[in-house]
Length: 138
Image (cartoon, rainbow, N blue to C red; front, side, top):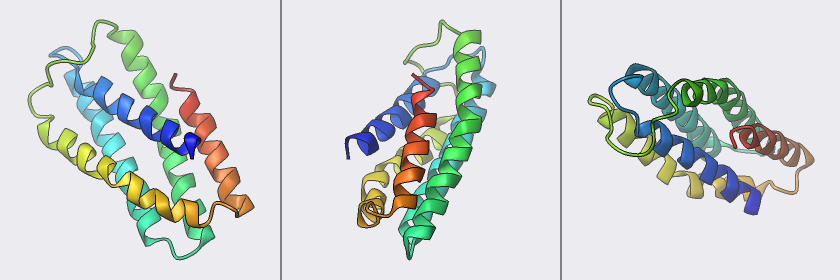
């Protein structure tokens, strides 16, 4: 369970970091936050709709692949704009950020599906892979 909460914390960290971008780089920030919202929404919906361990694995794998693509974008953004910290949200990102906040709030409930199938070896392997990818953000 600690790994699950760690992954959630990293996801939320990314959301808050990206949300703090100013005028330069705001279009990149908007793209990143939209991408993260879509990936996270797909993950939550996939878990909620899961009927068995295989469905849970598919949701986890889809999220992992989405984050695998997003993490390099975020790292590049952080390197390109090191001055950006939490702060003023660029205009036009309010709806995307609210969408990400809303879907992120559903993660703990959706994670109950994962705990139901946590003894399944494939679910464990998918969670380990997701943890490995999310660890690359730090």
